[in-house]
Length: 251
Length: 179
View 1 (tube, helix red, strand yellow):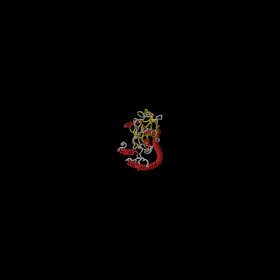
View 2 (cartoon, one colour):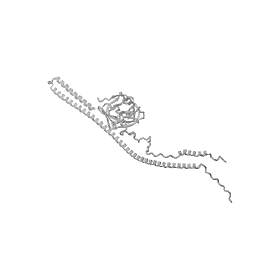
View 3 (cartoon, one colour):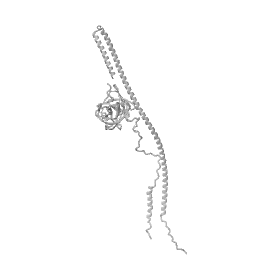
């Protein structure tokens, strides 16, 4: 009698168990699961980098950009004559212009980009630079940031002012270099740019590409270049209140 | 005569224990088929719902696209209007500034004219007094013996003062005119 041809009972019992386990383990992975119910309220995911449509830079309370809003027109009703100049706000009630714009003044009149008249309080001029500070009784619309350092040669520059006492105008150019002040109105070096200015532009702010003030226009050269009081000088003057003396009225 | 005995194949004996396994396999197959059927129908239903949602959102997107196009057109028009308005405000601000300059210049010119007129009036009055005094002095000098020489000298000095005042007034007038 051959005994070796019959499987042992234990081995026969193992086979289905192995099959069941195999089906259980592999089948659960292969078989599709039941679908999740469709949500009744699908909340879309917001793209992280999505931003509002273009034109955001030009948004402002009234459609005028910051460069226009900080520029002011100054009318100097002098003791014997009338002259106009430009200026720009550096605070809620403070603006900067040139000394020669407010000199020999009987009455200073300041108006904004939209024609609003701003009542002037006091005016003071610097002794060592062609700069003046005018304090206003009414709030100025906007004021820019002052750059921390002077611009480099070749840097872009933008000038906002009232050339010839006319409409608010923005011109642009580049810094050509620096020179000794040919008018001897300022101590130290002044900046030269090829941005066009005219009489009446005196006191205009010169801005960099980020809208920061890098200088104050005070004159133009025979080559039609503009001369700026550099922002470093402006900062020095502003830091020392003793540098300024009140503007003398008509004698 | 009976033939040779035929060979009788041995009866195939069923393997013991196979039937339960077959039954078990059948049951498992049926369970599996049922599960697959349920899964399939549920996936079909879910798919249909998602497709419906997709159509609904596509419809919303199309509507929003249209609204966006309209809003963009309105925005462009509003920007144009804003640019026109700001340009006009700048023009008006400039016109106001020019009018202010003209008003101040006119006032200064008016003040100047008033100063000139006042100076001219002073010159006229002073000249008149000078001429009157000189006429009177000439009259007195025509009959000098009738008057005290000291009085005549004093009167002449007074007339000279009047004429000096006239000259000063005229000088002031000329200065105003030179401005």
